[in-house]
Image 1: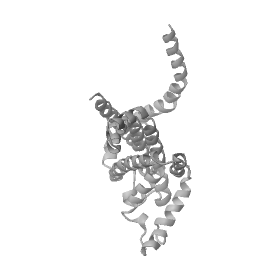
Image 2: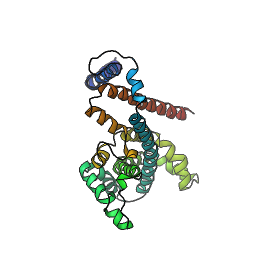
Image 3: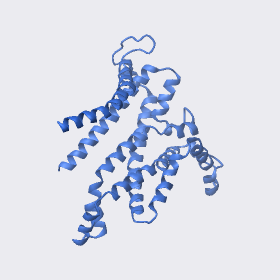
Length: 278
């Protein structure tokens, strides 16, 4: 009886949030799914025609290619650098101060960040003066790596904090027992601490993966709606479709994007659970 009452209390507290998700997220998305099979103006059912149109669209294929490349580069880079920085901070005094330093880029307005990038990377900027060149980095293939640098710089802070929370959450008794058994520092990290960081690893990977699809403001403010080809991401494409009122193509693209995101999260979760069972 007591357990049943606890479940009712638990459900009571969950209900407002669940209703909010249904009303403001699930129902609008279901409407987007419906619109992906109709025309934008007349609402006429056209089947898979909208999906055929976007997969035959060169801009869509370019945006998908660049976004996939951007995610494939940024995700391991962010995870690796964040873990490395967290390991160093876990062994230094005053870790709280350094956590604040790493989180500072997240608190900076995007406009401020863009002004810094322009002063550094555009023709006549600090980097050109230091190298003695006159290269507009945002107008060449190097713009992709500027975008990667911008993403890692801005998102490294929460990655370090989450890794550090996981490291500090490892029971000290377990570490001491391994040390008493003769394990060195490297062996302790490899065999004791890292296996217990699957929770932070899952959280950081999913958050970082989702954030790669949101790296739009900086690229848009620097390069505009049609930036250098290698900087043209899905977020640029959706913005241009919205400006052109191509809502049918937007709906089909959003459904495809949601399917990829959901598929990645489910697959990653299954692989992580399978690893724990083994």
